[in-house]
Length: 226
Image (cartoon, rainbow, N blue to C red; front, side, top):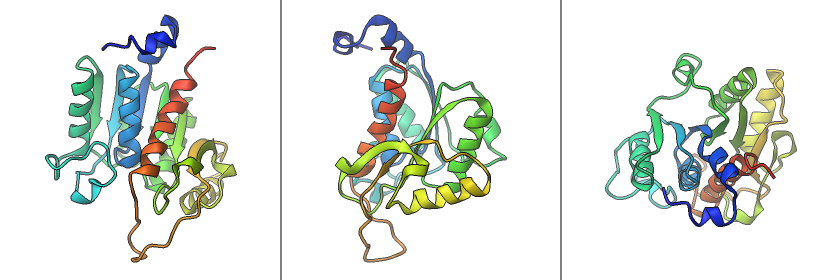
């Protein structure tokens, strides 16, 4: 993969360090898709992706990996194909599963970072426990639905989030399980707008994809030796 433009701003040791990272990415929707894009285009060689979903037409307005030709197809399969179309030499593997305590054993590699881009709180808690128990670095994503302002996204820890219903529920469960809330996360201070149908979360391209780039940015910038 040609990284000549990256070589203008990073030295060889840092580029090699980034390329050799081993990343676990859980969730390939709007947030996870853009995180994957950034990781691949930075030349990261070893990535494991996990998702049990397929693409739907409702994904087309925001999910980077979706297109009219892959509706109904596995997100994992399409993500792998997309990554290899950018870097044919990438070592990317995928698991088309929903992560639970019973299925967690399939992701048994040693990871430098775990990126949680899923939207299920129980899975988030499971991944945080898994990372803490194994000494892996992790960053999680909080709510990006019903929001319009990517400039209000930031990186902090879960205990410092506000105006985010998902983060609030996550904090509560972590505290109940006596798990630290000092976990890095991407979150938005924007108040969610109300949807026409309270059972449906609205979303657009702006916030989820920016959140995904911030997740990847955290991993990359924490791997650069100043």
